[in-house]
Image 1 (cartoon, one colour):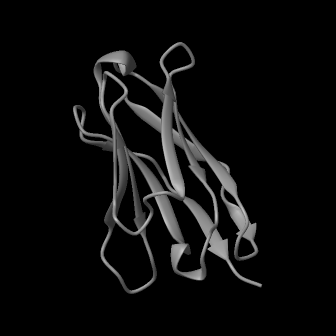
Image 2 (cartoon, helix red, strand yellow; image 1 turned 180 degrees about the vertical axis):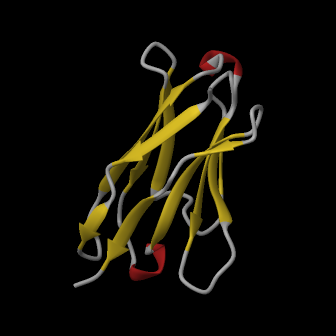
Length: 113
């Protein structure tokens, strides 16, 4: 059974940083691209960043230069380092495994002073 468990969300002031983690199980992690999405209140879910099997990363324009996605195949974990956070980054962040079409439960990120 595929499981994706996110952690690391919380409340942070504008300009601050957070590091999200997504622990995966139930599928061959090293053979799967991994993606972070987010959904803000009243808005559609949007792609934030993707990392391929080979470690190539792609970002939404809104987070380029501020966010960084990485993966540790040995630990079966994908990370999202978020720096220079803005209030508009406030959302529930979800981990997604495209190959198995599986979602995590989400972790709340709130950027506010």
